[in-house]
Image (cartoon, rainbow, N blue to C red; front, side, top):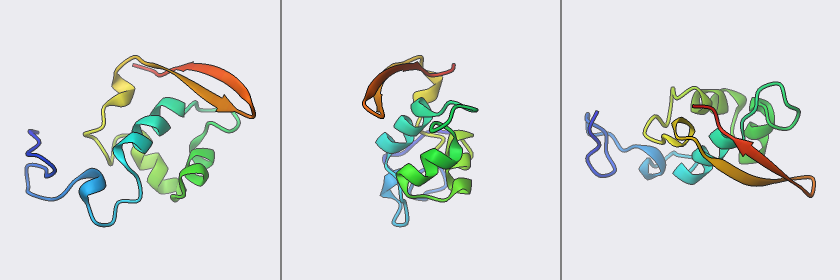
Length: 94
């Protein structure tokens, strides 16, 4: 699928350019990098609450059902994040 500016191949607005988007590309990439299943505070529900969206919305974001044009998780990256004052180094999955 070739992106044409801020529209997909069918001509619909995508990502934060869509009028009803509640997240930005940066927030999606960060949520995907932060997500660690079975770790308290890093699961789907915690991320959904942190970003102010429903759990189903966050599940779709993390599974690439929505926001497929944001490919942050597929690239190995490391991020420094704060968790209750402690710096934690995370590496996302490939």
